[in-house]
Image 1 (cartoon, rainbow, N blue to C red):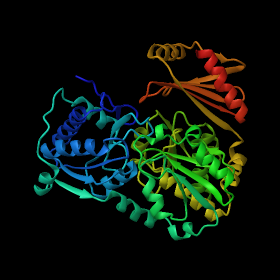
Image 2: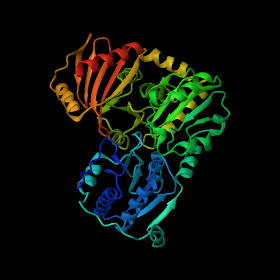
Image 3: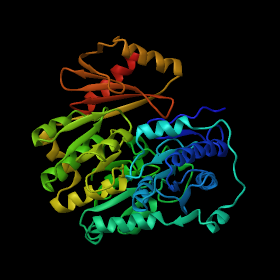
Image 4: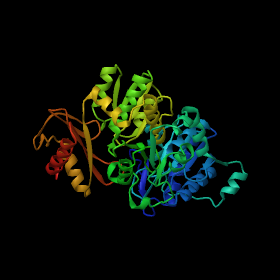
Length: 465
């Protein structure tokens, strides 16, 4: 029996190796059993992104749920994760399932759970579902058409629902006529149709269907977005470049010079706009790997900050019970007040675009504005593909307090909420963390300049290897 474990953001595995029709059916059976324990007449919204065999895995999930007495609302065609989350809330469903491996390489697919609040299912419930995964499962030979005839299955247009929702949140006509033009890179992901339909004036990159993502992992970080960077740097009328990942819940940005604007800066930009300009308040919730500059800004603005382990499910859990202005992760997953408690790269990108329109400032100018509040800084990350024994050895040494300096960078404070974070004398920091979804050791680094951030990464890599 394959042991199936949910990581920081769902269960992910290599297609046809561990991520098979049979194993997906096992997870679907566990979900059905968990829902049936509640005694409710349960309903689940299901969607898939652009990955290989997404429709097959989504239909398998639907079949198993229907066979176990759970009604299904199934999206036709690919959809983003935020579309499924919004659909769960709008349809008052008990759960959502997204067949996606998010930003992982094309060989992977995955299974995400979404709660009735319109965000990630809370960790306690995910653990309960995981515990119910059976060793064997029967897959019904009933067709989806037959389930539809029996009233157990309906098809829904989640993309239209989402676009209609955007029209209630933004003045899209004004954005389409903006003097600051936008470029959008879908990375061949599930957000590709939304910008095409809502912002027809935008310049589009990689907005076509390609389940292999042209062999580039659909993660919106600079090394994967060099074409967007070049387009921004060589097209004077373009003032902001937006990128989203495979299931469109993560964001990356570029300024008018083709410089990458990472998630730390985006979080600060959004806090600045929502609080200083829109006069909104609330707690700011950030994952452990996010810059401490957020704390500095919030201290100046009188906003409370809470730090969580890595995984948006921890942030979402707080957002549904407390008054939260923004919840954000280093990886580009950000949720804001006035929207569902879910990461949403397109929604966040439209907020930034609106920010530019309302202030008449470019993205570069807005970044300079936040530097006036928190000081100038630069962030870098290095993902090391290591043998498991290497990875475990490094993390054990970190946990045992072996690392007290990295070259010239002396450690003055250590935190271990999720991974190990080392603070340096001049305000810089580094962090070591084993990925929860990939065979990777991540090294994070922040310095007061780009050169310093790169130097910290190099010194840390030398020390641990």
